[in-house]
Image (cartoon, rainbow over all chains, first blue to last red; front, side):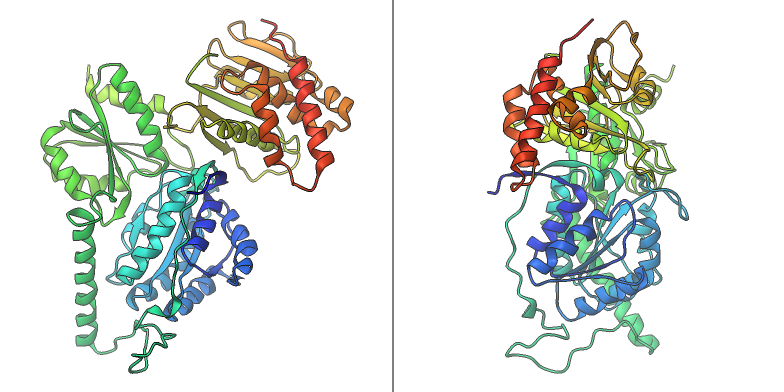
Length: 361
Length: 184
């Protein structure tokens, strides 16, 4: 195994993408993710790849559509306002079932907002983001190591499901440096997707077409139910199937009375809170969804039987809390604590919230 | 300090090499096999604005990398002292650049060390390495990272073809280390 290197989260995604066999990047700069295109602008030409700084986010996502249709491993990245611009293309890509990796290093919104870290794009990420009946697989790393590992996993999932995969990160994870052990390179064969426009294997049959246009209503309905069935397969794989452990991290939940729930950088802070709670005799545990869609509902169904309450913490006014409520399904109370606008909640203030819930006097 | 974890905030104005100073600490920690994290305060400001950076070095897995109560504040200019001094945990330490900070009295519940970083850096050839002088001073007080570890980490932080740059930095590191002693 390779030795550890100190890297920024944004750079770790870039290097991991190259190791995953991605040779095409199309994007447009925006803080706090610009180190990623900067890294790939230098790195991709070294491996005969293509880096294009497009004239806009809209152009970039449509270039992704094109390269993905041809069978290549391809990615784009942006931060919140830029991701909004890309949503039309994401919808087309989902409709045409094109695998690709999307990265959102989230910053404060709405609108131009600011460049500080936030988690306020959860709804956009997990509800599709663009128009139409579709889903993207959403991965939520919480360390620089996972920024690399989930990039590799993201490309694999994208190909397996013929679906866009979104890596949902934030300004802290993008900017921070931690030691990373880079994964081994993947041997990706471009000419391996029989549906792709660029497929040229021996068993090449009819001319391929990648499109999201189904003008006939019956055809579109059939297509949408086909997509729906695929999403059901994905949901099963991430809840009861082979990726069920990949989907979630549980920390000290077995005897926990209060379960703290958070994803991404928040989960790191929650781990500190859980540690402090335990020292004070409060039986706290933590659930960290690592996959935000399909949501790890199964874990909450189980824990709703043993825990007495849930506290969801987010860097937003409360978005993922809705999924926790849907999962707990009224069996136990679900509370929320959040900071927004680019503010990161401290372990002290979260501990204070726990105290209020556990010792209501 | 004698702890499982060392949390450091370093601050100054843009151009003083604050982020690099953090990287020196993080790289050194990583080199001796500890867990490390480095987070810059990134803002819209550039040269002349404020810059700060948080580093955690720990024998254990780092849960939250966000530093709220640092064990040590390394302050390169006066506004940095004003901004962060109240955050230092009681019993913690302030290492400050006395070339640019004329203040003498600080909190009574912390240890203080004055380093004339700009002068010491100028003595070894360039006041651009004032940040590295401060890294040398930190080596004096760190429980987890001794001076040798810093010496070993430095070559990986420098371009391989700039030997004179490495020598300049190592000299600055030594200056800071030799100068550092706690005054409280």
